[in-house]
Every structure is written in C-alpha cells, then in structure tokens.
Image (cartoon, rainbow, N blue to C red; front, side, top):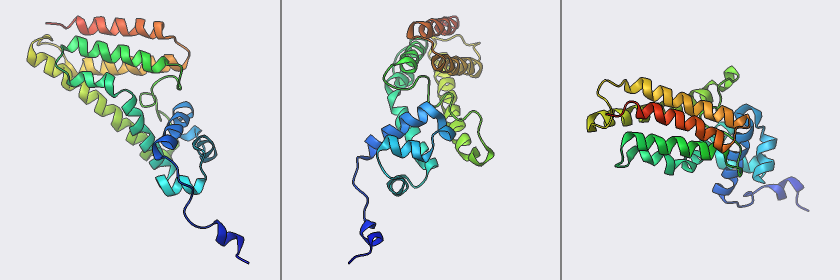
Length: 204
C-alpha cells in the first residue's frame, strides 16, 4: 500500500492564474498587505498555501502581482496622460475616472495604490518602498504631462509643474481615503471638480 504522504505529492490542481490573482487583489485591496493573512488569501483564491507559493513564490510577490493587475483597472483613465487632448481635459478624465473607480460598488472602496502600505512593520519595508515607488512614478507622469502642457501652450509658462502634480496626487489620495470612509460618487466628483478648477486656473 502506498504511503498517504506519497499520494499527496505531485502537481497541485490547475487553476487560472488571472482569476485567482483577481481574488487576491480584492483581498489585499480590502484588508491591506499586513491585514490579509495567507489563510484569508487562500480562502478567497480557492487554492492551498502550497499552490499559492508554487505559483507566486511568496506573499510579497503575490502582492506585487496583484498591484500590477490593479493598475490595469484604471488604465483607460490614466491613458489620458498620453492622448492628444489638452492638459485640463486629461486631468479632468483622471480625476472623474478615479472618483468612479474609488466608489464603484463591485469592489473595495478607494485606491489600492494611493493608500497602500502607508504604515507597516519594519520587516515589510521592501513592500512599502515598492508601493511608494509606484506612487512616485504616477507623480512623475503627472509632472511630465503638465510640462508637456506648458510646451504645447495650453498651460501658463509660469506654472510649477511639480507642485501642481503633487497637489493632484494629494487630491487623489484624499479621495481614496474619503471613499474608504463612505463618500459617495457624487461627493467624490465634487472634490474632483474643485481640483479640475485649480488645473483650469493655470490654463494659458
């Protein structure tokens, strides 16, 4: 008779990577990196810890993959940065689109990146640094878009691109927090409209 342990060895059951990653993304989005345990993740993903580690190597790598998948949810909104439209229109689309994503009923509220890992245990500093780098890349992209607006003549030459970009980043992070606290789509759009007005104030 075969040893029971021997029968359990072998390839884990097959699963669709994007489907289980989506479940992990929702769990991290709702509970944060430290708040989502391996038990929470495997329960949501419908796989064993063995399968999780075999497919994603570690909780940290799973989180990074979930963040990358999350970015695709807002790809249509943030593609406005590269489109041939004026600067105010580009940020209007980003701000309004963010309000819609942050308040949508089909997933956790807020932004998974804007408010992710703001405080964590020292052993998770690598993850915190990874998320901070993602936020810095967004800030750089905002700055570059405003600089492009100055070059193309739709934003005033005296505008401080980095300061305006940081203002917009702060608004988006604040909208994320307020969405987590229960702000409705309409309330978030009100915030977005104030920010859009500030960008428009710099129109050439």
